[in-house]
Image 1 (cartoon, rainbow, N blue to C red):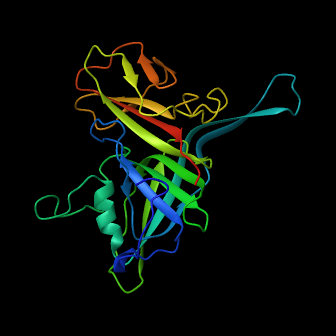
Image 2: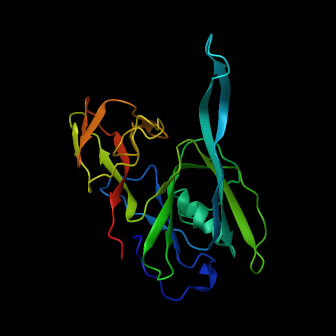
Length: 265
């Protein structure tokens, strides 16, 4: 699904309030592909993400500095929710978790979470009332699903899925969209070619949770690990070429999230 995707008449269970909005996701642990294809999320009533919750804050003063304080913050998390309509939530939850929810796959979905690993990246796309022109997008990297309640489906009922993330969510400007490239490690390959030229999101030195100017993040997920590890050093990029100082291990996955330019209709 592209940010300019056009829809026809909705199916009975796909009625939503945000008629000019698109919502899509990509699994964090996706199979290596450049780029990884995004999956559409249907049946959404609303999307919300709260302000930053800092796990640690402290106001410090310099000796002899008087009332000039420095506030130190660390360990940020962001909480959010997606509200679904008409029983769509459970099937969408299965897709977000990478499950095939049938008798040939996962027959049940537990309402509790066994770990705190990120599961998917969410992009919520807002368009003007021509249903084409991109205005902006909300991007929520590395979404972690919370324990969730269960309710019976009634006509026009809603179901809310709560989540949190430890990666800095952000608003993406008009004419840009996210790309997720995943490369296989070989134990010797140090150069990786992105499918698009990455945009400078922010100056990395000003926003420490954006680790590179032109990439949101680079992660390595080694064999047996349940999630990728954020690489705070050891990678550099020039336009579409990303270079690792040390070759990622054989069977590892190099996960790169970044933004690219998309024509404004």
